[in-house]
Length: 206
Image (cartoon, rainbow, N blue to C red; front, side, top):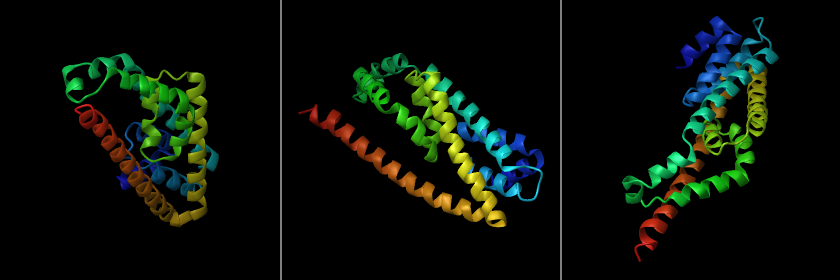
């Protein structure tokens, strides 16, 4: 994967960065840290410059985020309510009210979530889906997305440039950060699932 990414950036420059980052937002397993830090490194020995890489990456990020936001818009709360109200939903003890609770949560914390999650691996892409489902206005979504992704891109591209030929060491540090965040997210999800199962399958059966 990494060799393919490096070859594309080597061959297509800014356009390669733009396309890879756009795809990375839709398919999170593609490592943005490799794209951005290597792009930063390339500014030390090619005609590419730091701001060109940052702008190309930010435009790509926003394009990918808009695609996922649109997917979330299609997966409207009404569709989820129908799924929750189906036989499968009832078998899983899901309730239509759960959708409303999720909407209320996003209405209260969505603005912070869309911005802050841009700094969290994997989630930085996927947060666009609930934003679309919650019908967050473009006036809020785009500025939060642009600013969050711009900061992420700015930091990693500059780190790649500063590290020079040792740019891969930055990727290693980011990978450690990603693993730590992933473990924390898994723990949060597991705890949430346990609490949900306890409420729906144990408490309700008493």
